[in-house]
Image 1: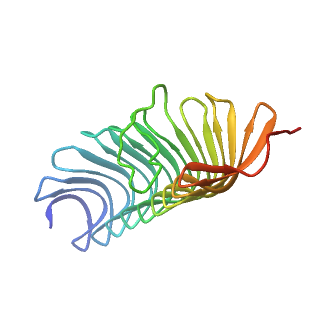
Image 2 (image 1 turned 45 degrees about the horizontal axis):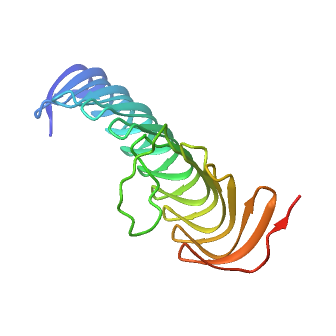
Length: 231
């Protein structure tokens, strides 16, 4: 898809600085090399809804750039590779008011990153959990490891009331060994989890005491010790 070009040429080929107006109304202003968008340039879609300002290589977004989507309020600033978010970047979502800063691979969150969730977002606790529950005050934050856009590995999730979970995650769910603090009760649970629910051996810490027990699919099954003081 080509259009009308105005700018520098070398032997009849676009090279240097110029403007390319595509047939569909998209516009590119910036550097060209051997006929391709290459170097610094600004690309604007025909309706002005999407604007990218940054580096290009062989007509693909590549290197550092900034991109915004006017209608949704989304914004990204960071590294690109072959038209995708790739490397360190900051992604803000206007509708959900969420903000992620960290590592991307081929357009998806991968590696270490920090997500500040918007006020209408809640943690999906189990695989079949589809409920929507708004945070009463403020936002929730997750900082830790990601794979393929989901929380996976070691990380800490903090709720708006200062309650938190710190430990192992799998495919976006709490899974493995970890510690949960319930701010309203002043109580800790430390132990095993399965698909977002307490499952297996664990212990409750409350007001200087500890009591061990067993849980199954989120429900307490039995105590395996009496409540005892801990230092």
